Image (cartoon, rainbow, N blue to C red; front, side, top):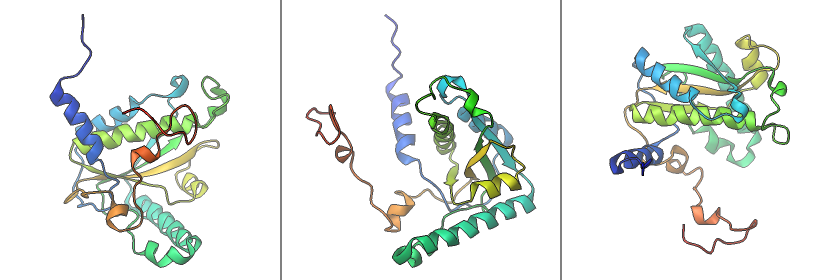
Length: 220
């Protein structure tokens, strides 16, 4: 009988890259070789998507003036977010929330227009287009970590302002600004944990059985 199980070393590598993935904000400049960037984008493109709609679109930002404009949009939203956080505003202001000006590559990932025409898998859960795009980003994230590159997902921006800046068609929507490139070091733990902003919850608090808030009685 054919075994579809990967070797032990291959399995260990997969779990290791998942555990060591980090949302990076500190970059060391440098460059991403074209063949590596191609592999990362291909990994993203191999993500599952509901109804095989492949809703993701990638915009590579190579113009310095455009990168600077994107950075300005993020900075404007950072200030608005700080104001909305109230008593945690000053604490938030101390966090580094993006690496747009320091990273080797900037990409904007967005949802395509015309998504309403795709009903398969979305009739009751239309947000599955966003779920599919998120899977593509996660694929790229894990592949980048395996390549020794840092990657960060920046979501601090006003979507319509970014769409206008990039001349995106009506009905499309930018979801992520991706910072990608070499780093001096990866964080030992998520940056927000290191900075004392938040603490992760253990799995057992989030795992239920046969109903919401029903504790899981089996070992997993």
